Image (cartoon, rainbow, N blue to C red; front, side, top):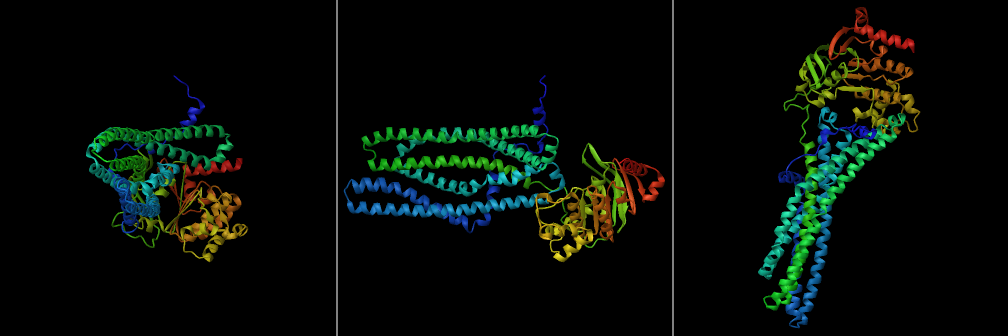
Amino acid sequence: MKKKTVSDKVLSRFQYSSDEVIEKPFNWKQMLRLFSYMKPYRKGLLPLSIMMVLLNTGVKLLIPILIGVYTLDKALFEKDGKLLAILVALIAFLYLINYVANYFRIKWMNILGQSVIYDLRKHLFTHVQTLSHRFFDQRSAGSILVRIMNDINSLQELFTNGVINLLMDMILLVGIFIILFSLSPQLTLAIMIILPIMFFISTSLRRNIRRSWQLVRLKQSKLNSHLNESIQGIRVTQSFTQEKENMTFFDGINTENFESWRIASQKNAMFRPLVELTNALGTAVLIWYGASLIQEKTISIGYFVSFAFYLGMFWEPISRLGTVYNQLLMGMASSERIFEFLDEKPNVDEKKDAIQLDNIIGKIDFEDVEFSYDERRPALRKINLEMQAGQTVALVGHTGSGKTTIANLINRFYDPTAGKVKIDGNDLRDVTLASLRNQISVVLQDTFIFSGTIKDNIRFGRPDASDEEVMEAAIAIGAHVFIENLPNGYETEVEERGNILSVGERQLLSFARALLADPRILILDEATASIDTETEVKIQKALKTLLNGRTAIIIAHRLSTIREADNIFVLDHGKIIEQGNHDELMDLQGEYFQLVKAQFNMLSAG
């Protein structure tokens, strides 16, 4: 048995099982669904583009007849100078019309294609915003990014050129075939015998090419996921000196991405030479059989020249159809991945008759609540608890005991597996999500600061707040002093995730954000864990203002944060094992007493 190397272990550290290649047959209904995004433009850009296509195609079909049959057989053969001058002028005018039609066709189709891509990306992003937390639990940020950016970008060529070229080439092919048959049925039938061979070979490649492009999307998803993770975790990587291992892993997935592109491109490239080979065979048949027909005086030189022009034109759209066909295959691979997300339904969804929950008091009840993130890992077991309106309630327990899960259920980020969660007597599954979450604020240990100004981050939960209200919230929470010391005060632009701020400063901003939102229920999930002692003193003062008149759920390990709580619930493995205020629980000398004692001993040792 081969021993695993370090590189093998590094390469196997991530699994992307939720983003596998989608195995479906080529589905024209799905392609029609994709093309339905062109419907908003069916009264403007689309008909204008089609008009230019028809004009362009008509000119192309007319010119060879004028050159061969009329110019050669009539004007030159009969030495009619006047007719020759008229034909030359007419052909020049038709080429000018062709140029103008092409210019507007390309211009309008580019605008149409970009508009469709814009609409599709907007629709996908909007839909992803509505999906539940479980969706994001199962997928990396990189894989979602690939679908919204790369997969939609890959459809750009299809909408910009592919659709209209398909229409133009189909009309052109039908027109050419009719004209060829009218010029010489025998020569047309002799040449067209090659087409079924090409059709059979190209059809057999279809499934293989589509799967190759699906694989390309999967590899790109993995590459983006790793890049996203590597950049965000660079400090951890460098602190553990794992740069080499990280580079090894990147090299592995980068190689896989390169190989998938190489194989897909190689299979794509097979179609064009196939068309050129058919073209060569068709030309050989034309010269050999056409020469014999001219000798037999079945057709004239002019007819033969026109026939040769049309035959050259015939292979050109077939070659382009191969390109469009490949674009359709790529579009099919990308649309499958896009529609997989668009067809995803939120695990937490609103009922059609959901009620508006306005001006809540803040009473929270858990009735026989059970919850599990998966079948093997129950997080809550038969939880019954009551939080009175305006109370400050603390949840304590070891890591994994279910504290954060309770907070997530109050926000309705998840629905309980069994039982009910109620606010003011209303089952949360019966109310609208917006009306619920508008009255709840959450402050996390790892607070998220968005790119933008300090002021914009504070008013994130209440965009219509005035500058004065933003400043008042910052003053109340103790953040005003450090904000004023920044280069541009409240107008200071913070970098991605607020990297120019310290951990404590970011946490103060999150408290100011929560205060400004003026929620009826406030959840503090280890919100003071990353704050130094001096900042915590400021926070403790501000908390009295923040918690006043609100139902507050505090998840914390620090005794200083929870000892003033009206009620404390002690959890262990998803069950409530003790409850009461600080003094009552200390008198019990149970699990809470042991937690406090352990913390006291740790502080004493420190």
